Amino acid sequence: MKILVTGGAGFIGSHLVDALVEEGHEVVVLDSLDPQVHQDEPDYMNSRATYHFGRVGDLTILERVLEGVEVIFHEAAAVGVGQSMYEIARYVEANTFETARMLDQIVNHENQVKRIVVASSMSIYGEGAYECEDCGVVYPELRSDEQMKRRIWEMQCPECGKTTKPLPTDEEKPLKPRSIYAITKRDQEEMCLSVGQAYGIPTTALRYFNVYGPRQSLSNPYTGVCAIFSSRIKNNNPPLIFEDGLQTRDFISVHDIIKANILAMKKRSGDYETFNVGTGNAISILEVAEKLTELYSSDVKPEIVNKFRAGDIRHCFADTRKIEQKLGFKPEHSFEEGMRELVAWGEKVEAEDEFEQAYEELKVKGLVEE
Image (cartoon, rainbow, N blue to C red; front, side, top):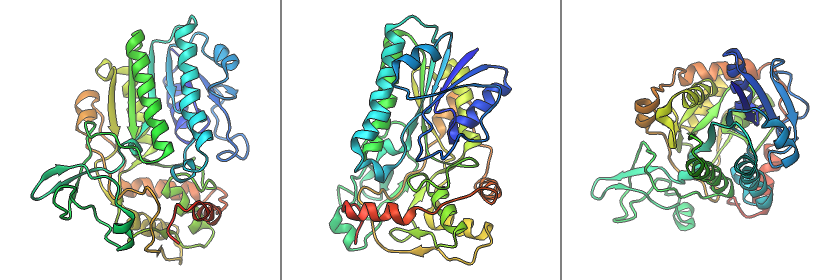
């Protein structure tokens, strides 16, 4: 088949391109080569794929790259939760409007598109699911500034005020995106599913949890925590950890993300469905920092700053039952194995530590506690 991968020169997209080429597909890539992510054309770009460099929303380019395409993997997006809160127009343009233009091109011009797989994000949930011993399953709002200033980090039950226990978050949890980035990822998911259903184009949305692995930009201070911590450690700077470091996320290897995408393309049981793509394991941010410093054989120690950022959530990890039942997906890479692979790759690449600059930007905007 002829397949288009938007964002196919990026971290996740490039691994997907490799897998599709290996399966014998004709792969076309559309990527803007955003300088925040790419200083130059990446040396890992697959020579057996065809590359077009430009915006997803450029209708002239879209008309050319969509010719003969049967499947679209929509991976392209501006990524950065904190940055999205002060570069609002850029994130809405890149994620929401450019996705809209791509869909507009598909439905208003002749083409052969028969399937769409769109990359969504766990960030659209906001906080994860919790359980109160008295009130049962609850979905708290963000913690108040008052609570955070009192250093009460764990979530309180919205009904009775007791401390809650985090639960795996399933796909039925109400969506409460709490950043512009998260809102635009919800837009991408919902627009693709809505248009796909209306026009009979089978569409699947994959809600990625915290993805890590080789090719992640270590010089981009707005990307995932594994890359940010790696950059700090490689430059002999301590990873800075907000709150008490015990907040948890679900870390999944990029290789497992690719496996989920391939299954979504091949299995009709995923048509018009949304799926969590995670491991189901809750890993603390402190544990990530400690593991990376250990594997890099670094003398630096993670620094817990006991401060908070606006909009940060406490716990969110995946309930993976739906994707296992409908697509037969199970992650194959353990956290330990994945971290070792990330570090082995990270030791070979350059990494500029731009964290302090990004941190100062948040402080200037009033998005982090002074």
